[in-house]
Structures are given as C-alpha cells and as structure tokens.
Image 1 (cartoon, one colour):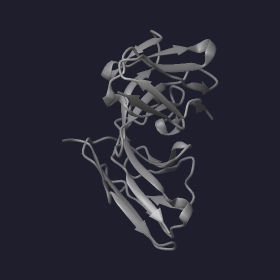
Image 2 (tube, rainbow over the protein chains, first blue to last red):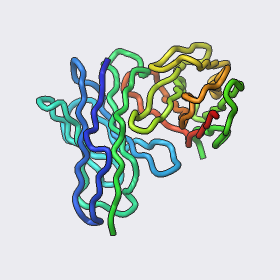
Image 3 (cartoon, rainbow over the protein chains, first blue to last red):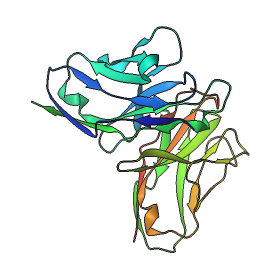
Length: 116
Length: 114
C-alpha cells in the first residue's frame, strides 16, 4: 500500500516569510496527491491536488505544490505566510486510477506556527 | 450551508459502553468514510461506503461497525468501547468512489474512553 511521510512535525515561520512543507510518498506509480489544511477544532479542507499534467499545482489561499517524480515528493509552498495560515497541514496520497477512493493514506501532519 | 454534520461534538464514555457517532451529509455524495485522527499518526480510515447499502473495511476497522441505510447517513458504532478508541473521529464524503475524488470532511467528534 502507499504511504506518506511528512518529515517535519512542527515548523515555525515569521509572518511574511516564505514557507515550504515537505511531503514524500511511496507508491509504485504516479498516484493522486493532495494537501489538506486543518484549522484548530475544524475538519480538513482541501488546498490542492495533483493528478497529472503540469507538475506545479496552484491551490487556494495562495498555496502551490510541486510534484517531483524523481524525488517522490510533493512539497507545499507559499511565498508569504499570513498569521491565518497557522494550522495543521496534511499530505495525502490516493490510489491508482481505476481504483476506489477508499485507499487514501494521510501523512502524520505538520503543525505550522506563524510568529508576528 | 451544505456539508457534513457530526454528532456529538465531544463525548466522554466509560469503557465497555456502546456508542454511536452520527454523520449526515446533504451533498448527495455517493461515498462516505470514517477516519480516526491520532497525534503523530495522521488520519486512518476505519470504514467506508462506496454507495448506499454497501460498506467496507479500512485500515483500522477492529472494534467498529458501520451501516449505510441511505445516501445521507453513515453512523459509526463502537459496540464495547475501550480506552484505545480515544481519538478524534472524522466523517468524510466524496461524490464519487473513484480514486482521487476530493473528500469533504465534517468538524469531527472528540471521544474519550475512560
């Protein structure tokens, strides 16, 4: 089965600074890749997803992610962080095309703290 | 506002008791899911349903059961709760059961088993 690793448990950045959250996946082929955000006490909200095509994916709230097949990575980036971006971020890998959606695996999450 | 509702918001439960977590969606999505979220482990799939009338086991199904009598509701039952089932439980849905379909999440139920 596929798996996801988020190497950073907790990251602190200053407001206005750039951000990169790391995600590495393990799967036999190109999977579906997702980034979700979870604000305190809330459910998860989809930021962006990658299926195929352009390896740089734009999402909501100014986030983007780049798929790098050679590195099995799907890192999330934002040029300038806002205080409201403080949250928990989850990378997820879905199943191969043609399979059901019940095989999605989530990383352990990265908690983002934003300093004023 | 369309979406997923979960009840209760939080619950403290004595070990050995039976508990049903409720989940209702109004988006007419075919597929629904139950996850548990534990610190350091992310979200793990407990059970899923690709369409009304069908259910399947996820990664961590032991101690849990589900039913899908209609499109909108997907309750999760703990027949005899144990402390290791202390967790935050999220219900999710997607309009398709196809790989890659976006999943929409409810606000979660925080369950403590003593």
